[in-house]
Length: 292
Image (cartoon, rainbow, N blue to C red; front, side, top):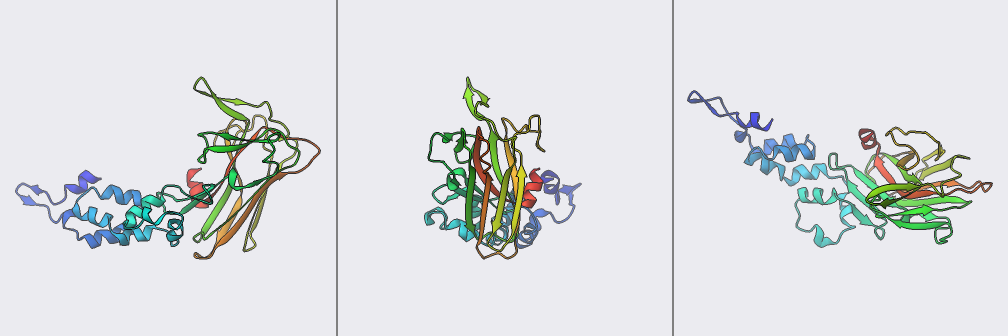
């Protein structure tokens, strides 16, 4: 595309075809860029000087940032973003911005500018987490937070979490990221042990979410079904699986929404174990569909 567009306006048999891309005023290019995605803008910026100038326009990148981007910047030291252009602010916020002691992260989707969030297991209330007979923290590169909670065995399984945030108007999906079995490296290869994995096929785990404006969602899943393969082609044992709790709607930007979420299996007639709890994701539903 770039090569063919750049040829416009070149001489043919001693005469020019007509005006080329270099003749388009920068403000007109900027108006077109308002309707393109950030990756498209960055690709077109390589065509000529006018396109490069429009691609650096604060007005263009202001339109790509969410209405509450200042709330994300407030999590960072001022010196990280002072004197930055709106384009550089967009690039900065497209990388994870930690808050709540590093137990939560928020970032912008690079293509759409929509807000995404992840919450570490360390940012949740886990029954029995301080008793090493039941739970252990395992450092790992397979988590964006570099640590997961591993359950060896317990009777009362309950994980609760809560977050307050001024989400922009959108529909969001909340999921738990879980892994059956303990994984580790042996001679450079990933190996899974299911020594402690039991009890998840007896009764389902109940997942719940609720919002401060009264929305609720509930799902139940059996975490261990032998031979089961999820929509991504992964088996439930030995793979990271995202369990969808539900969706919630934010009608108006600017107000803070409180989301509470949990998963529990508190039937004490049997024990369960061998489960890794990584994190909770809150992602705009349209992005979840695109990824799937």
